[in-house]
Image (cartoon, rainbow, N blue to C red; front, top):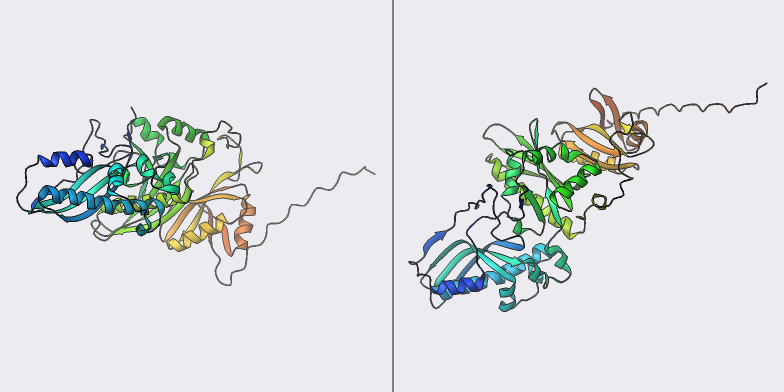
Length: 434
């Protein structure tokens, strides 16, 4: 059975604001400034999957700090909740619109009451008519959309299946249960994002289909099967390439944020943790990936691939198509892996940009990254190897044949371009004889 997890939240249970107000009337007043803090431990379902406390439709704004006073403790708490609503709405507006929080439309308390469906108390202190707390507010997506104007469409994206790919030394992991990168994505409270992440509790069959190798497949039929199986619109492939200095020492990683069956790159960034806490690094990487996906959604770049739902698959490349020199015949787009010298991130990015700029190259993506060595770039192109070599030479680079396949590098200063391949002489026209 497939279990779907859109909102993986932590903290205590939340209740609507008006219900909390009624229950607060019967709550015993606690001693002055008695500390009450909820443990940040996810609640578990029977299958061990985190349960969304906000539900599938909530937009969560967490970490809202309030400090309010009142005639008594109950009045102070209510004033604190009101204050939290007024602070959370501009924060939600800024996150969805990409505009400053100060530009958020002014809202009355009654309108906010209608939008806020629940409150989570992350930490609170109450006593002596004063209320200090950190709260998370859950906005109803449908009701909030009515006040978002032209940004209403950003309140919720189509459902996307997340396939987190981790490369740690020589190991690549996808949906294997022991993957710490997969675990980091289950810790994400998806209600804090407009992206509708679909995260599953994988069965053995899911582990096979959602492996790191499968995320690199370019077979449209395979991806259509996944889209139908998990009832999603498309796939998100956040890839993390982990680099450890030594046991217990600093740890860094390269995060490459991809989208769709072709693995189109949305962005990349380096993430590090000086204390060597891998889990903390991965939590930060999840937040960075989420910010890239939100920006892409806002810019209209997170549109599902129509090939995943259309019946016409005439343009799909058959798996058994004949190959010539690693490229598909008859000018069809095929795959070619080349190696690139990557002394640093900038060098690898420059080579990727060069390859993407060549006419006839459909896609260029990093398949494996080795800092200070040779990384692997996967090309989708209809060019022959000679044509690709000539185009690369024209840009001041060189494509050579290495022991493990073609290698691209920047041409050294004073190094002459490689000789152009000899033209094949045309066959003489057939004569009449004599």
